[in-house]
Length: 133
Image (cartoon, rainbow, N blue to C red; front, side):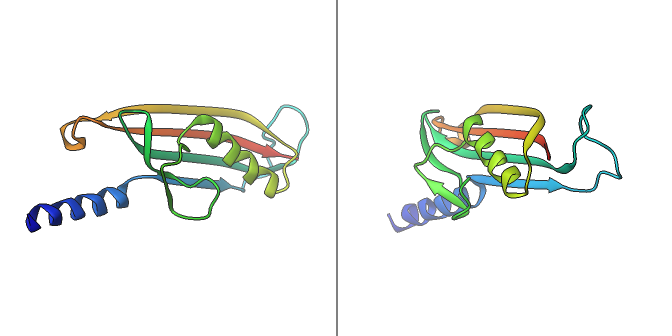
């Protein structure tokens, strides 16, 4: 019994390390080039990503924290395009941008096979855009 509890604790700790991630990256060097056809001042290029682990593809277990308070959240559904766009636009506004252009997005749901005990799913949303003044 102690051995089984030990394995369970190791499995929970390992999944915590690899589950639920939210990241945002920016690039600010454009070598004097415009990012849009109209005359604008480029602020940054922003790439935001949120992912998480779900049970039965509906119940969030561990997901990335898009509000920046912690590394990951328990039982909060944050791995969606809506939350990822919100995450990106908050960052763009904080950097002084008046608008974002050329926004692209990607969303995926992946079933985690036998290692996930047939009930786990991995969701990931990513959004990229140019922030301009």
